[in-house]
Image 1: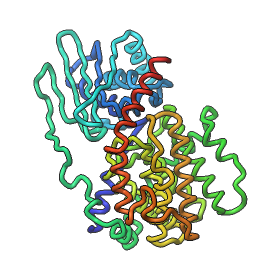
Image 2 (image 1 turned 90 degrees about the vertical axis):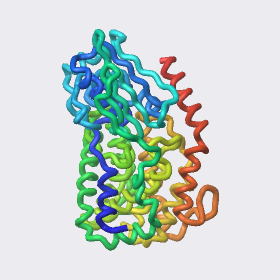
Image 3 (image 1 turned 90 degrees about the horizontal axis):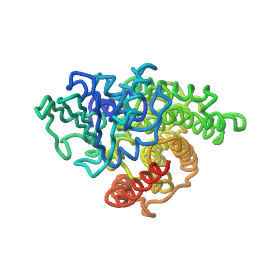
Image 4 (image 1 turned 45 degrees about the vertical axis):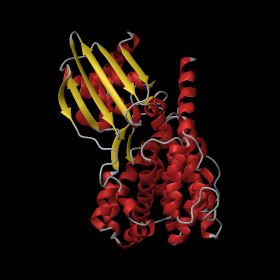
Length: 427
């Protein structure tokens, strides 16, 4: 792969988001529909795929103190600014929140899920008198594929099952990409360091908020002197936990997402940056480590796609992070592979039960596991090839994870969505 293509692929998978991407997508669809309607809607209906429902029904909405998809849909209709993309919720005001709450309280917002054309799918329809408009999102959280007003097409984008060139990393062995990163001027990756620092700001906000307890409690543990394995693990777990909790509970924080996920972005960027700072790495070394972690995360997500039945932070972002920390410890490519195998062999079956506060516990645990796997690999201790889900090559392992997700855990995911739906009806 040429250097420019590598850089373009990395940059294309990074996006600025405010709040969880699933309610953000619902908010965006409602905003696009309301914009096409041309006036404030009186009624809002939102159809989502089971996975969007799973990931959006219990998560905090930034700046509102509220949770779930109904308030997100109402805010989108009021914001009427689809050009904001997944950062749309950064424009929420207190007055707008009050209006959105009134719309929801009046029963004017309906959200439901059913089998949809794509695992990632949102259709928002808004009504005012005899007028109506709808907007559809599919394949990716900000990918608006259709807007209609009174049945007439306002916007239409052609879709294909697998857009050509969507996953360019899969055309190359992992070692080729790893070596390309090491051969590239580290300054070319400084944009990743900037993304990491932005996500670290969310962690600091979480640590400084007395209502956010997980990161502060983890950080307060005695970690011992110097950059011991325990100290590095402690720092990584505390900062990723703090950022994850802040995001999942709806603090008004901006996160740089990777491969369509803000929580992946926290694990990837905050995890690597925290380890690098604890280890005393230079900015150049940190940038290279971030490139390695980001490349691996994107590579794995190319197999498992945006929606997963298991925790993507554990099997994608933490796996990339393990390779990056191994590099920071002075390890070579083969030791990085061993660290990645250990993470996947340990966390490969950790299921996803939707986006919510407990994601902070999962992603911080996965980040800590990544550090542990890196240190173990440096001592020639790892899950060997051909054992369990681990393939004979790292590419085979990634492909196996893809198969485990779909078709392997498709029924698990359906049952999980059913359980979540039942729990919501009982509250």
